[in-house]
Image (cartoon, rainbow, N blue to C red; front, top):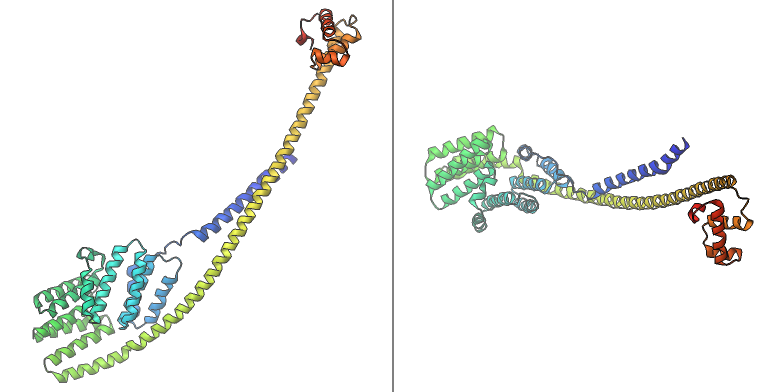
Length: 423
């Protein structure tokens, strides 16, 4: 029982303790060095969520939601790309094109670090085209369009692709290619009808300009009615405003200043309620506050990482010390066992030798030793001790030949043939 307890204490407990230390150390190093696993984000749902918030004039909630994704340690580069892209669209809706372009650039940088470089690069180019079009930056617009590879447009969702087609149609309209322009607009309308009809006012606004150019009042009015219908149906303020603005130009072009004035009053009231400038300013302020919070959080995280490094180092040192002590204890235990084995072997040999001596003595008693002289007995004992003739002669102070003579006499008396038989 005591042997089993000692085995547990000396062998199993140190082994279990060592494994426990190794497990803790491995977990700590894994948590410290393993890249964060990407969180599960449904990008379509995220886009819908942000659009609904922005459509309800809750842009600050949109920004807070997107910043949470950007600052989440579990977010991948692709997650952050989508978050920055939605931030850009949020700023763009408030006509803050500077903020939109800044966030597009950040989206591009994150996209380049992901496995979707071609997709993200194509989407960013299209979004830049839309912004340059809104800002009437013709030179930048045409240069960016040249960078688009038509074979890569399948990476762009149908909704964004419809807006891009609308821009192409506007460029054709500017060149008085009304047939090509109308085809582009109709293609865009088909895409949005399939994908997201709430954005149809964008295309019908373009068609109002087309029919205004063609002096087709009926079709222009029809386009306005359809566009305004979808703007009201989905409750999108910005689309309602843009549709009304299109009709202002339509009435002015047709010298109907009375209706133009009435519509202008509606637009002014709508814009006052929409209050894009004030909302954009609030977003900028919120962004500053979120940046401060982010910096504070990063500082806290840095302290946590530093403490974790220290913890891992201390744990490793503890592991090294434990290994050293365990090795030392094993070495001492091994030496102790070797000493015990040596002592046991010595005792066994001693017992065996004692038994052999007793057996020899008994054997000698059975042999007639009366003819053996004391000198003979001395020589027999020295032979049994393994000494050579020369060593026997030196110990008894006789010559080698005398030893040989006595041995021959002993062989004859004991009736043995050689030294081995005598031993």
